[in-house]
Length: 213
Image (cartoon, rainbow, N blue to C red; front, side, top):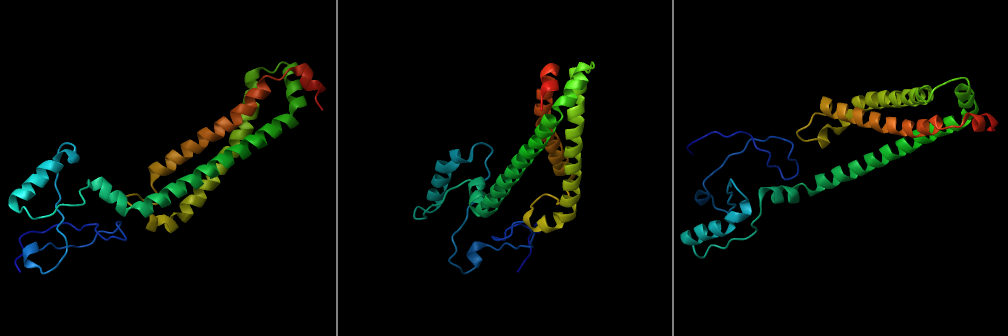
């Protein structure tokens, strides 16, 4: 055989598209097989607009050649990666549920703390504390819990990312952008979960707060 060119490795393993493998291409007419021919057409505009033109070009060469299973490359990949997409959606749903539960839990803790410190807040307000001082008091407590939880989560995630390497494609298990985005998201959610009880504490009437039992 005569080598007429060299190509890069290709991700063409049906069961593992994450690994580059060496491939070779041979003229279809020189290989005895019954495999269908896959014609790949690159389009500068919408690929579906070329369907009629491609059919006509094939018919002009061989009128008896059937043409079937016309699809875009994205549609082809969607069919191949359906299992990976389902796993990603499932993991995202579980992560979203965990984030929601964590937010509810943090909100409950801060709200309960505010209710337990109602008299204290009333005394502070009666002695001249401004709403911003009450806000700062509650937010600092909540954000300390949030930052502690985020720090523990980051350390745990960083130490267990090796278990996820086989599930990732085109992304490092210790991707800095991903960790930064998740940290920012958790910080925002924690801030909102703390702000709502703090806003309630800011509106306390000192007279009613002092009578609270």
